[in-house]
Length: 559
Image (cartoon, helix red, strand yellow):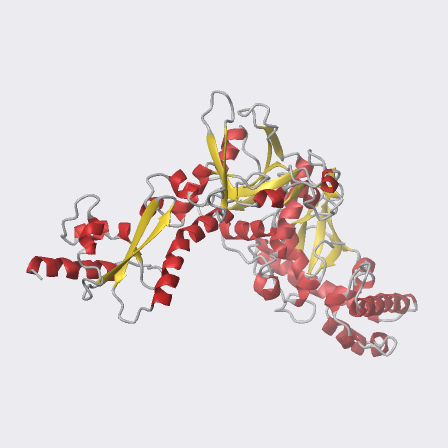
């Protein structure tokens, strides 16, 4: 071998070794070799790379070749792969590696298609959008021997001559003066989206959002979209325990009540797509109140639902389905900027009233003690009840039908039992309801237990007042969903001064200029309701202080 050929052979091997990632078995698409080989100083005339490599390829005539070539045929297009020659490559392994190489781009193509957000109700995606997703995924169709995207996709379209195809293509013209647009979807997706005769009779939900409406009745949001929203938004923990990490209950609750507030404020926008006359396409959008890593507002963009049956209640189909969570002008957000002239506004919980944001320690605070102590006994710390009953000599109050307070879990308590309650839920409700009745009777008979409990709350509020005077952020603004009004949360440390047990909900009374203490909330519900306004900037209401047990209680309950 001449010196120049030996040098080219060495550079070829170095280039192959340096390309990463490789396909299984070390195969490299031949088109990925051209540029680095030229940069290494090897002259590669146009369309001549394969001929150069064949000079160094192993064959029966040249068993000492240092590389191996592998080709596949896709719709009359030959695609070549190269790798270092292997000494232990069996025929079975060669065939398996070749088949793996043949499915590589198909896998990448389907992954990009499945991950697309802005599909229509029948699963079609604009081919141009698929091209953008492939670029983001690092897939360049030119590396697979195609000058344009469509020929690359057409290799995998299901036809009579290619029954194993995994895709379908269609063309449509949005308007007479508009160019033809090509759409793609998985083969067989039509059956997935086809509406049966029974489904066609499903009642459609309302088009216009209404006060008090549930988000799930107005629009269908796929579960995977909540994860996307969490990944888009500023980093935040949207769950209490690891078992809920996938479901993101706090984020779902946040979006549900944000929607309710926006309905009340009439801030959900709806428009027809006037650029496609006669299409019947409609869009709706609202501001989620969240921002991405660059502090751009994130919006929920919806399209009218042509596929019934998507609802929490099968007999009723929502009018809308979520296209995607978007920012203006980016990817699916281009649809938002094309359709909507007005920018969707955030929910407003303050109503420009200072009393909804700041707690005035110079004003009187009245407490609804009967509601807090007798009707919400299940929310009081167990240790507090033990200490007070022991101090008053009424530890017998905590023994109910041979069940002690440590025999029930507070997180099992339900104010309104579900249709099929668990034995633990029934046991817990029976226990705490009876305990509340006993405390009430004790108070009516002149006992000290109820009064001692009142005093512990008063002492805790004395400390709370000092905390607010030291740091005004101690009082946290909160949205009261069931009453649709704002309030403030104050910390209650009832057992140890350095540990907050509960949040006290206080409301400003504008006529009398005093506060009313309405109820107490477990920390998980307090956090969930305060998060509707903003992420709490507090030294006492933090995610790391909320236990997994707190999260078991119904987050909708705030009475």
